[in-house]
Length: 145
Image 1 (cartoon, rainbow, N blue to C red):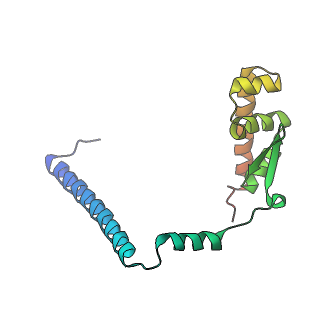
Image 2: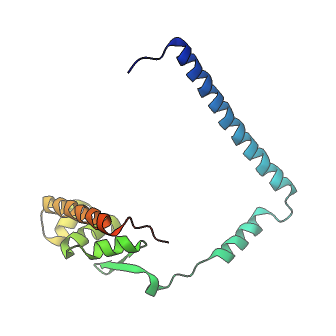
């Protein structure tokens, strides 16, 4: 790779300066527009935000949730493909993932609960990651609508 000439370096510096100026001015314009909107808006932001939240609230029913249980604690999964991938894992690999990512336990705490070594916890997690990766490759990328 060759080093840029002095002219090319100067052009790059000018372009960089131009980009910084454009971004700074765009930020100033957005701030100015927000101030003008706030100054001339008679409804107020709080009322609009309240109405938006009221109208866009979505009820969550337990029957529609994808839930695993680890020691009686619910572990909700929002992506159906991920739920199916975790469901396809052997019980010990599934429990390592639930303890680690949903209950936020350390490897040592997981090892004590499962009565295995810390190294076994690590190996189970790595095998689970590989199986989930393979599941995604076989069944798609998990883009929920």
